[in-house]
Image 1 (tube, rainbow, N blue to C red):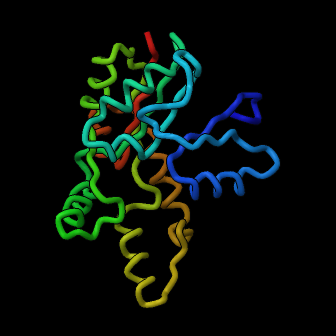
Image 2 (image 1 turned 90 degrees about the vertical axis):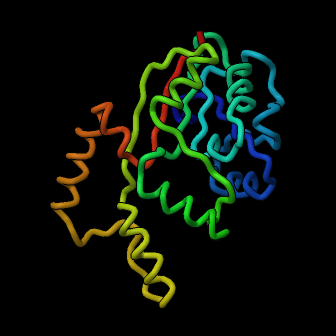
Amino acid sequence: MRALGADVYLLDYSRESLRIIRLLSGEDPVKVILGDARNCPFGAGTFDIVFHQGLLEHFHSPWHLLRENARILKKGGLLIVDVPQTFHVYTLMKHLLMILGLWFGGWERQFTPGSLSGLLEKLGFEVIRVYGDWSRPGVIYKIIRQVFMKVRIVLPMYPKFLGAFTVRWYRLQSRLRKKRLLLYTVLSIGVIARKI
């Protein structure tokens, strides 16, 4: 977005996260803001686009965050929300690990395409698009990779050993994810919604 001339702001409550973003953004820095996403230090109707990925699922109630998103968006502005999807093996594993107290992310929730769309519609947004994607590489490979790392064997994050098969599989996934029903099988879903 910066390359296209947009002013880009990144809000986080963690000073360390903001420090890392400053380091990674190099000579074309984003504007980093220390703050709480449920009580943003911006006026009403400030932004054309608000985006968050992997955030909404950490709140017991999604309403505070989504209302604040709506407040800081201009009329006609876009809200893009990306979250874990309910009906996936990842969700089952996550809940098991939460029960055992081993989940790295603390407490998390998940959404279906319908439940996430419904939340935004209740707040007066018009849902433009619902999308989703499977994990790349797959969750099973990531688990195997983590197990191997415990015994100091490092597998590549993105394996190339399957070559043409992997390319064909990713192409098939790209076609399939356009089918609404199959969005209930993907790892993560997102909604693009317009503030009315």
